[in-house]
Length: 159
Image (cartoon, rainbow, N blue to C red):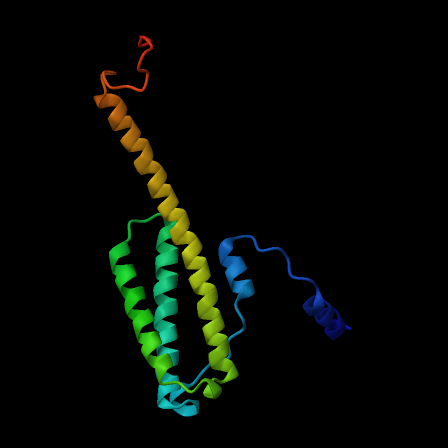
């Protein structure tokens, strides 16, 4: 009886994700452990290591932006650029037919990590843009004496 209830729980619809991190975990395919030295050729082993480094970089940047802690965005940009270059070079040497389901799953997980990172970085840049606009408007307002205002032809309203 206990096994039947456990199976029923497995078939139950997943609960809505409580956070973006839960959503990411729910969308990521369950990755089987990949043993590059034992199961993969040299190119596939390099590809797996490259994907793992990129995922780690993306996760670190995403976590840093979520925590609102100061992070070195230039360093993360350089690491992601280097990882993309490395991934591109490895993919050139890869026979597309040699992709195993485990490697394809890793690439799918990388895509999901990239999408999440892109959303977080975009949100961060929009916030920075909004703050810089507020600051620029405040500086312009403080420096302006009204001499060159838009109200040409109308008397200036004084508070």
